[in-house]
Length: 130
Image 1 (spheres, rainbow, N blue to C red):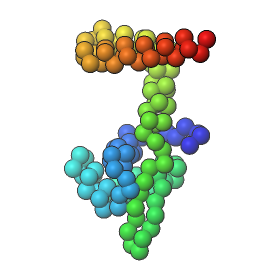
Image 2 (spheres, one colour):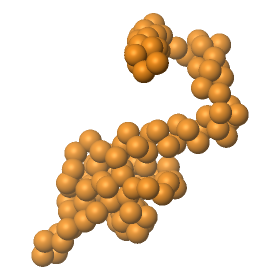
Image 3 (tube, rainbow, N blue to C red):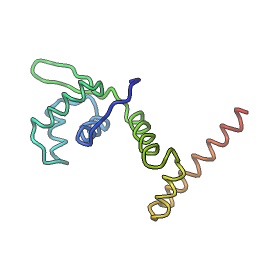
Image 4 (cartoon, rainbow, N blue to C red):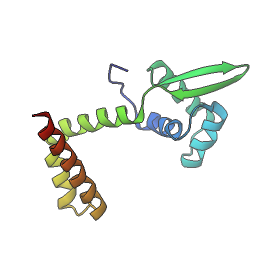
């Protein structure tokens, strides 16, 4: 996918189900979504159709059954949504985002360790590319 796709929160529920396991029949998607949300089957199928029109999902028809798979990769979506969030709320500053979480005490020791490892890996790549 080259163009950014706008995904609503409701559509994201559907995508999360399919990112966990795909392909899935529409009936299986309905069951899994209804375990999380109090949505009618018709609502879920409407969201599936929207995601197909947006190019985020593909489907195959086998008789009367429809099987759906994501085209939009979870990591690609997360990167785009993360960049948009950082640009819109933190003027493009990743440090501002992390600092906000740190100031609110929302970074666990594991989060800090992962951030340190990411920075160390990035610094090593930067050093080797010079």
